[in-house]
Image 1 (cartoon, helix red, strand yellow):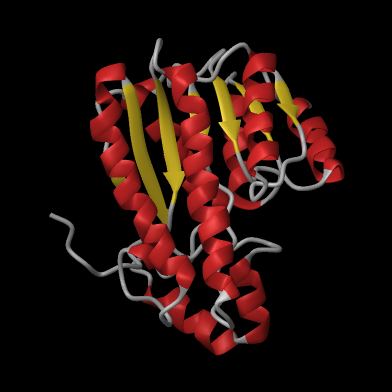
Image 2 (cartoon, rainbow, N blue to C red):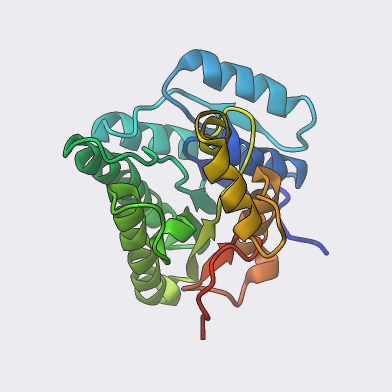
Length: 253
């Protein structure tokens, strides 16, 4: 299947490691031009160099603090200018879980919510003439009760609503907006790797709860994100795609 991604311009936040990095790798493999970011120049430079080794398209990046509005908006404009436009935007960066203080709520709001909203508002003017695709990274913790009440779960849920509303508001401009909600994803250095070390019993119970009896990989999430953002998915908008190996048990009509 031709995903129609060659020479497309893609911006991805939080994209030097984990799921974001795998998304960047796959877009690059498909011939897209990719712009990445993280908070440190070292991590960005390393990732750009590594991705460029096998990429068919152009790979660029710059450090960016998503919580700094001016820095973030400057990163978007700089990347769009260097690539010559933006066709696809993947707001991936997240503050992660945690519920030890009120500060967690502010952190998730600033990073997950405002980090998405500011990026969307920055790319929309560039997409209004030719169209484009925005795919937000959410979580199954937003659609089904998981662990304990915490800001990560609640604020990621707000992004699913935001995504749906954006899809209705900007469909006239041929801008598709979707979200992808991964279940537990296990990889070296990730949250579930830390849980496996600190609470092996909980890790094993969670693993067995999956219909497929295993946790997912970042590559499996990236495959779905890239497809949903591509021309091969041109008739899909306003969808929250659950990618969880059968971990959630709700029936989605």
